[in-house]
Amino acid sequence: KLGNETAKAELGRSAWKLFHTIMARYPDTPSKDEQTALKSYVHLFVRLYPCGECAEHFKHIVDKFPPQVSSRSAAAAWACHVHNQVNKSLDKELFDCSNIGDFYDCGCADDEKDGMN
Ligand code: FAD
Image 1 (cartoon, rainbow, N blue to C red):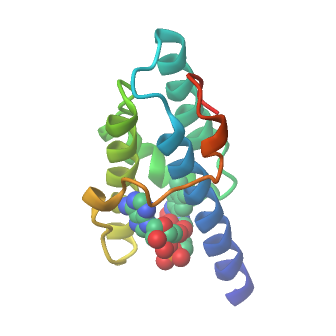
Image 2 (spheres, rainbow, N blue to C red):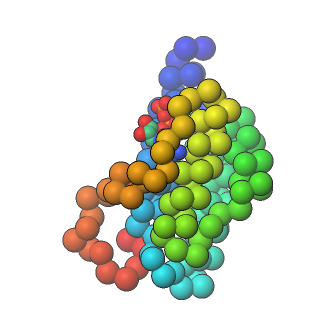
Image 3 (spheres, helix red, strand yellow):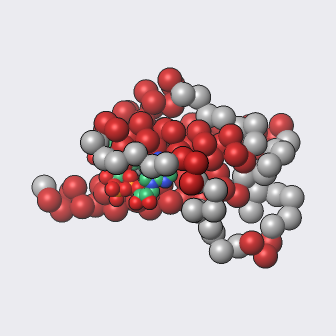
């Protein structure tokens, strides 16, 4: 059982890292197509997340707080907020979302063009 909890936590940390890093690289002024892509990504992330109880729980959170895709700052703030909802339910410390700015750095600043990657 301990092994399961460790694996679940490890998966969670990896998933959150990717999730927040995607938001940090999302365009400041996304096109309609980019907004649709982020919405799809979030819905498929929820649907396909490998921990079933986590996915089910997170679905309720995302239903209550729909993805904000109008800008990078909106998306990053939204992701921070929904992660905090999970933190709250697991009795974890809340993250200060005003510090989300450059916390997630993918190390890919060199290819900062106009796209999402
Ligand atoms: P994590 O919550 O994994 O966070 C990793 C790091 O992200 C933190 O150390 C901190 O630096 C940063 N961080 C913390 N909060 C925020 C925030 N709000 N915004 C941005 N960065 C932040 N586990 C369960 O046991 N039950 C569940 O129902 C469950 N549901 C989950 C649903 C999803 C969609 C995901 C991705 C994970 C879920 N998990 C669940 C796993 C859980 O959220 C944690 O990932 C796991 O418990 C490890 O926690 P941690 O304390 O290492 O920090």
